Length: 471
Ligand SMILES: *Cc1c(COP(=O)(O)O)cnc(C)c1O
Image (cartoon, rainbow, N blue to C red):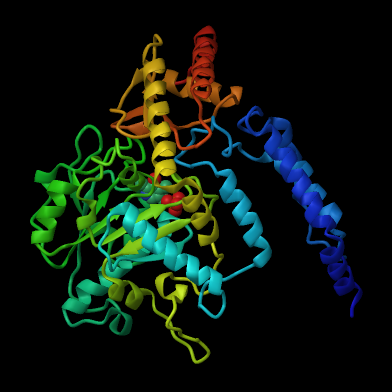
């Protein structure tokens, strides 16, 4: 046995690196709800400690963990807390972190049943739960991928496979050269990852047929061109700025009649279906053929958790299929047929734990709270002089602007500097806006009130020093 091997066996036996990491993790959790939401300049500067050449000699585990804790934990954004409103992120539920932590020690790859019977079992169970929760066709298959970017790619790959197959063209064998034409129709506010997927799949961004959208970013049904069976229609549950939903009831019916493939990007919005007060928003979504959704946004699983669902499992597995002489197929679920990867993390562990822990009622309650906090935010900020709410608060997104683009930008900059809460900017129909996304289980009424105070203060600072308001 080498010295290094010896050292590593010792680490398993005496558990020190694990205990140390655990203790630091608990320290981190203790302050997560009242710390600065964005790292301080000092913490950011200290990140330069990591700028070193790859060491020649091996280190001891304690030093490695300590460096990570000392310099790493200070340079995190507090997405786990209740006042991180940036992008559309989501927090992580305690049960999810705990289950992930446990499963980390198992180090499972659910590519094949024989590689991880527990991973395979839970993927099969969660697939059923998702079909039930979202009201999808019984034969729907789910693939557990890294996020909605990957899920959009997989859903559209299935669509590409099916449409070409209907034209007697096996895209896996023949590729796209001389292939029958596939039309892509989507709204002008489709998410960038949808457009990226169209590009990766060789379907040609230039040829996308764009449907008009209304003032909330929803597709105007009448502006959708005539559809046919060679068309992929890409819809949206939850506009990344406004949170708005396309009218699936009307649009899907039309698309279904034309036998078009409907894909829904529902990264964070699809979960509205699980909320009794909000399930009118994605009404009609079950008529689609493929859906992409994140666990790590609205459901608050830890990061790296997306799901692609497809009511045409044959198209999905054909699009993602792989084979090899050493592959052991089993009558049980082999996860790799539903994802582009072969080996991957068993992210289903925490997804299962969260769904089991919350149950339908808990999911409903948690997501409804996000909606209520967004409503509260809009109401309180709307009552302040100089702030304007730009969207209808249908779900969890609030778009706020000030009297001019320059002022909006300066106020946003000041809010970010204050670090009481964090959010980013966006552009909404030509105007600069501050985008507030309420996506955490942890956000309370007082988090909103404290954040509103920060907006107020940021405005005062901006108005006190108008020289800083650049054009
Ligand atoms: C976040 C988001 C995506 C991308 O999802 P990732 O999990 O970040 O890959 C796609 N579409 C919409 C509408 C989103 O909000």
